[in-house]
Length: 201
Image (cartoon, rainbow, N blue to C red; front, side):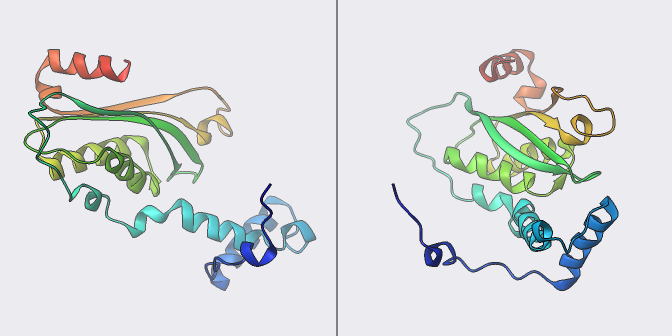
C-alpha cells in the first residue's frame, strides 16, 4: 500500500481564489440557512470555487484544436468511424445543476481521419461549460464537420439532468436524448439507419 505524505499532497499548488468569489459562496451558504463560519464549512467557499474552475475549464480551450492533426494513411478505409459510450459531465446553464451522460460520435471520412481520443476531447471541451444539451450536441457535430470535412457526421447524446431529477418536478431516472445528423447521415436514410444501428439505437 502506497502512503502519500502531507508534503506529496501539497505538491500541486492550489489555484488562488479571489475574495469576491469566496464571499459569493459564503452568501449562498447563509441564504440556504447554514453558517459559513462553522467548522465544517470554513474551507467550503475555496473548495467550491476551485471545483467550479475545474467544471468550467472548457472555457479555457478551443475544442477544434484537438482535430487539427489528421492522418491520410488509412489503407483505403472508407467506412464509418464511431466512438460510442463516451461518458461526460456538464452543468445546466439554467440552474448550474449537473448533467451526466454519454455520447456517440461518428463520421464518414473524406480523405482523412483523426485519433479517436480527439473526439472525446472535443466533447469534453464543449461539455465543461455551462450548457444545454441541444447546443452541446450541435457544437460537437459542427466542430467535427468543419474541421474534418467528412462525408457525414452523427452525434447522439443521452443524459440525465439534476435540474429535473433533484429539484422541480423531482423525477429521477429520466434520460434526455438529442441528435444531430449532417451530410450523408442526414440526406440518406440507409446511411442514417446504419450509423444509428452501430450506435445501438
